[in-house]
Image (cartoon, rainbow, N blue to C red):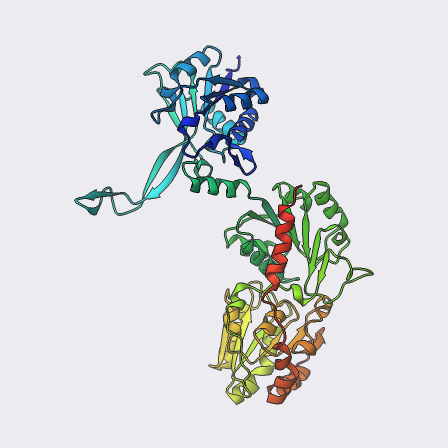
Length: 542
């Protein structure tokens, strides 16, 4: 069976433009007519692209692009029926082509993939005509005597409206009465048409969007800090398309990210293959140490890369490495490398903390916080509660216990708190407002992760228990910054914790050794600095 020939017709009538010289103005660096020609040539050979125009300038552009121009200085469309307006031209083309695709240059978000897919749908449905449409939901009203009255119903009604992007028609259906079957092709977001300067601005913003892929790890053994930081940064990259790839063991991370409505996939094969499959313009790795092979694959594709908390062999290949939790580099020359950024001056504070009210010092503490991050596998939370609860009960001090979404001992902790019968204990699981949990707190017991920076910002002297050797390298959590550091707790030392906690309840210890040192620490400008560096890489041409 011989394949039916097809052509693409691009109407380009300057008299019908809503913006002066719209078709030859540059939109995101490319004129509308050139963008349309390039898109059409992605579907059919240049010889099968025909531009219908009233402009000599556009005719010259066609000649230089090797496409055909049907030039008539007197052309002007007076109706919305594009097929009727060009019927004589389309009939003439029908002698050579069985299928004619009419494609509007004023719909610049349409891609050659869309046209090809619409044509496939046209063939599969054995249609006489295909029209691109979009669905909208509105409440429909009618004005009567200057008043609004419900016309159809007060409920939202789904309407299907025509998009002017694309019409595909059989040549033998151009004669009246021969169009028996018309099928829709839904474009929705890509159906935007330029009918105003506002549309132009929106299309330009959408066309200059880049694709940013976050590669994230988050599971009980390493906690959820990488997830929380990546989500915070993703919220700052609002003008671009953001995707997440979670490492194969990070189902906990994937479920938390997907709940924020980001497109999220879990690693299936080689990590670099899953990342490159998303066509990124920038990759942000927040998964601890990277391998050299993984990074070489990304760099071979010409993609800029930013890594967080990376001290692995792949870090040397990154365009930027932000290791805010480490005050100094690991290995010779790491600290002096201009692409490496170490220390608390690069810790990014979430907006909720910037807006929170920092705590004033109280000689007599009223509230204590116990929190050990997103997972707390050894259950330091419950063991710490057992140490501090009796003294807090005796002095009338409230205790806030906060655990993360990966905390596996929730049911046991709830039962334990009920057994204690202390009305001053408040338990919060997987809260989204951690800053509120820290407001009004005088002393905390925590692990040595990102939480210590938030505690410092909130002016909360804290006792810090490192859960493993990697946390022990987070040397910000020391006395210089307002923390009583107890080292790595390979075995929970209740006696020592009780001693330190009792000492810090005392007012001079907390004020002079810890609280006053925290008042000198400021994180508010750090996030803007880090995000600015990321966006500079995103603007860089590949």
